[in-house]
Figure 1 (cartoon, helix red, strand yellow):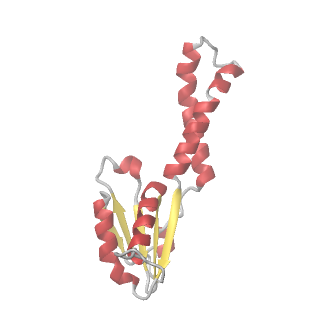
Figure 2 (cartoon, one colour):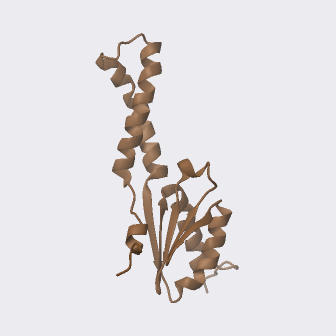
Figure 3 (cartoon, rainbow, N blue to C red):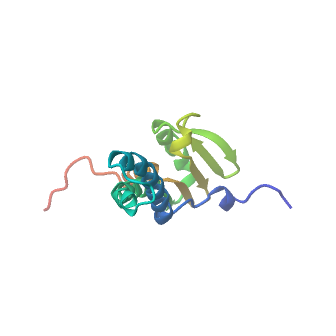
Amino acid sequence: MSSDPAPTELLPSGPDGWITFLYYFGLTSLIAIVPMARFWHLDFGQPASYQYALLPGILGGVWGAYWHRSITLEFTGKKPPEMLPKLEQKLKEMGLTKRQDEGAVHIYAPPAFPALWMGKVRVWVQARSIKIVGRAVHMRELQKWLAEEMFPKPTAPLRPH
């Protein structure tokens, strides 16, 4: 029996939108309470200081959930492993380089310091599909690229007969 982790263990689904929203909502609210309470000379025990921090908290939660929740992309085809070099090139253009190979799972990350807040992109290559897991900011760009790569637009405009 092998001690190597299964590919599904290397492809964590990550936090969904609600968990990410609550995380950013809570942190933004806590950060906003201090300057707002000082500005309006409020005591931290008063409900008003927390009510004032509600709007920045909601804005921070929505922003965080939009950009930083985890998204999984999966596409199938006849020979997805042949698509891997193009995918690696696109990830390189996005500033992500291969950091680790765990069998069929490739892990891409930005340079050391930006990796603290940008997150990793994990790619699982199978015989008939590729599964990509990462933050929404990366996945939206990859989704758009994959749509263009797999279904290119015609070079000449289509004309009705």
